[in-house]
Image 1 (spheres, rainbow, N blue to C red):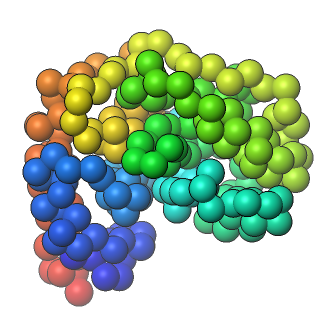
Image 2: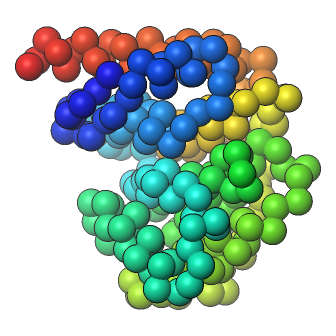
Image 3: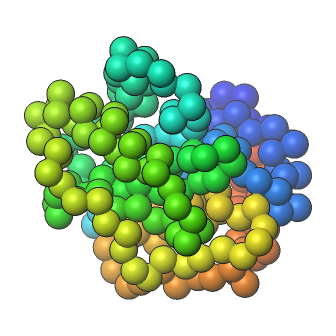
Length: 219
């Protein structure tokens, strides 16, 4: 759907991605990336005082736990992902990093520089997920240390409230909504639930389609 850029951001959405988004299937990393680039960054640029200074480490980290078998691979993986930030990590209030954990689940890691904490928002929090602390300690902390951020003693927290999903494939959409609610400075709590997911999916789809046709008009 997007082969090129929308407002300067790379987007590579196919019509298959849109179909999956509309009909409540599992969201791939490209949907999460495009959501952040087209849905969060543009409002932040237009009204910077309303948002935290946040960065985004793309969902290219999908499959991190499975794919990185040695320290060198981990280092290259994080260099690539964090290298897309437009400033050094310590200049951000928050860094959002969607995590693809297990085999088919998304959760959100928030690197909270001001509070010196790692926050995890997981829409299936009742599941035991040993790969989350492994992801944080096995790569994120090491990378940040190389960027002069000593995060080894930062606590890993699971804040409340944290809306939980039902039995569907909505974890990627929950991850997007966590970021949408955490990015503005004046939002309290996370005011959404599983009942909102059909509307949220439709709203995101309409936004992507409008962005596509706007880009066609400009070109």
